Amino acid sequence: MKISIRQPLWFTEIGAKDNQEDYLWPNPQKINERQRIFILCDGMGGQDSGEIASETAATSIGVYLTSHRPKDGYVSEGLLNEALSYAYDELDKKDNPLSQRKMGTTMACVVFHRGGVLAAHIGDSRIYHIRPSLANVENGLSGIVYQSADHSLVNDLIRAGELTEEEARNFTQKNVITRAMQPNLERRYKAEIYNIDDIQDGDFFFICCDGVLEQLSNEKLGSIMAEESLSDADKIAAIKSICDGKTKDNYSCWLIPVNEVIPESSDQKAGEEVIVTVSSSDTISTNTDKIGSVPNLIIDRQEPTNKKSSFRKWLISIFTFLCITAVILVVMFLRNPTENSQDADKMVDSINIAGLKNGKTDSIQQSAKSSQEANIEKKELPNKTDRSSEDKKGKRELIIKEVKTPEKVEAKPQETEKPEEVNSVKLDNSDKKKSMLINNSKSQDSPNGKQQ
Image (cartoon, rainbow, N blue to C red; front, side, top):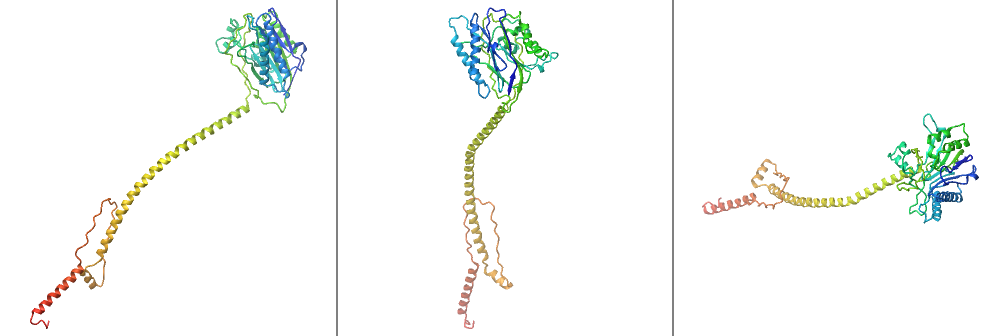
């Protein structure tokens, strides 16, 4: 997208302090509507240390971003982190090891680029994105679309529910911040970065230090920005008038009005910029003469959905499901061969046992069958008396008795049947011979044997 702005507005005042520790980059006297980078730093450390820290950090970040601006017009989180690293290095060079107080500074930066507006901050200097068309004083709507979260102890307590806004106004440690840029840190604090791609004509970006917030509330800021009768210069003047003569700290700000937003076909989709949120678990105590503002509750701004990220998560879920399914199948395959082999062995054993039993039964049945056939053959031979009787009737009958095979035959040695000792045919023949011999002997003994 192409974002055009009107003439940026600003003010920086010393307030009730002895020296000015706020620093605006670039030089407010030389800016115009072509400017794309705006930085505000609020120094701390006493005497000249706060001025050095704020000027060094703001100038280093601004110069680095300007000299390394991408050709395609998109400013990334990585580039901003490189600028912060460079600024930390420059702070290390300016550090005074003999100083009793360690200097430091907050940082608030807004970069207009082709993908929207990149907002980054460290400490309690605040960034606002205001849309006057959404403001409604009667309904309590300020029109604030985005507000950075202060890295301060009092804001952490408010968000945790330990303090109310009324209690925070008189909180004794409201000057304590939980994150700041300082030299020679073992662990450098990262900026909280957010890319805003929902920008419309007539929006405002407002960057201010905590001195401005001593007197300016969100409701008052929203009502001033929504007043159509006020020009841009009148609006910045109204904000300044609220702080003049009342603020104890230095108070400075940038007001950047958006003139026109022209979408492009090559615009990045919403949510493609990476947002980094760093936990503010570590607390940095600053000098007691730095008066902190009473932070307001953070306005929740719904982040745009990242379609690519959702699609990537969906693919990862599908891939994970397939991998789990494959593992289960492999485990089942490795277990089944063993179970199948055991089942096969049991089956072979049962077949062998059945085979032995069947073999014995077959042999027994074969023996019984042969015995039965032998009996049948013997019974088929008729004796002489039966044959003679059958000849008289003119009919020959064979007497065959069916012998049923027993259903179950025990595997015991079978007794061999003894053959019949009497053969009717042979007995008949021997009786005939005996009768002939008897008749011959009688004929010889009798006197009339020749006649016979």
